[in-house]
Image 1 (cartoon, rainbow, N blue to C red):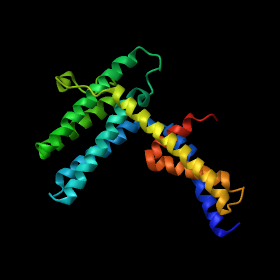
Image 2: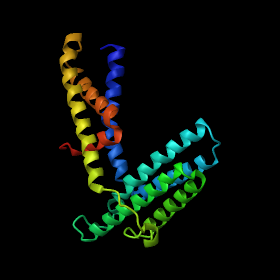
Image 3: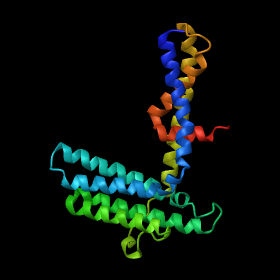
Image 4: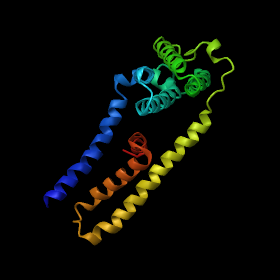
Length: 227
């Protein structure tokens, strides 16, 4: 076995090993503070954008604000799971999910004001996110924002988000299958040993899915596989 083969094999094994490790971290005690940690990053991004002078640096900072808001929104839709205080079959879930959709809508409304009055919008967005995190820590999963802050707010469609996420997951699976099929066809023709072919095929599938849909979605697909 050549040095190149050994290096490639180690790289692929690292990908395979990191998956379960990442999954284990997700179920650790720190996962209970996932929303808070995401909010902290979002508020820091808001502050950075507000203090950054106009120009390409400001544009990059505002894009970072947008990305962090999407992460907060993603956590909002699974806040019941993050809190760990609501059983899956509880009747409380419906109220929490409906409220989360409104909170996500309020955050989007604040985010959309960035292109109208950036300075004021960034300050308001940060305050809104801090209130969300504080109420979450206090166990108020169905009252992350008060009713006056949610007045006339259009809720974000959970169904639309679910369909979009399902499409991403399906794309990841299709990309993995296509890459695995291509690798299985090409590897024998270029003289790769039989011992390495399964690992290289697996590596190609994981790499393709990661490039298409992101590592987080790949981890979720791996979690669906039978043990």
